[in-house]
Length: 220
Image (cartoon, rainbow, N blue to C red):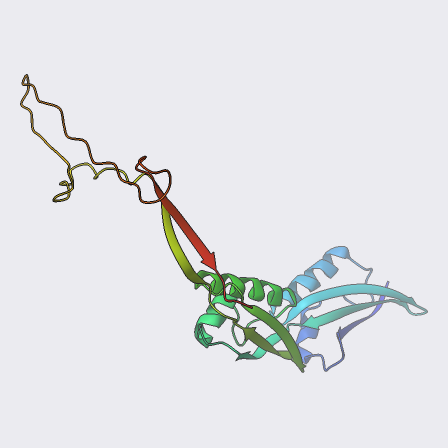
């Protein structure tokens, strides 16, 4: 038999008076699992709690049912330091953080990974990001400290492989030694002049060229 029903805030604090009417568990009645479940659903539906736990404790008078309420923690402010390549709005969009939105610890890991990916797309592959949270009542202040480092730069471009032939439908370069001809159906044509041998880099006389693309970050 339920002797009493209590609501308490996790971490302390005043319980809003309007919540008591959402509890379907009634003192003086046998405990009903359906009533407990309905009470939890109603409390969650207010949008004010991130967790609701119901527990029962035996007492000389009967069963004491307590609903423990964990209030939703929201982001009160977001501080960004050290950013130059990206503006604050770009950073918050990439991190998916917004003032007034609900906060949970995993959001920081998600924000950090998303920001590193955003910087990498811009060519800043050495960026480092640290995050901290400062509690402020039932809100938090999120701090993003960004060390961008130096952007990744192209130090050299070299090409290797066959220089190839002009693309289909492209006119031959002037003075290149290429010969073209048009032949009507049934007619014959003489031999075509071949391109002179070239050697850009590689084995002399084989017409090969050397291609290489090298990326190098800043010297440390």
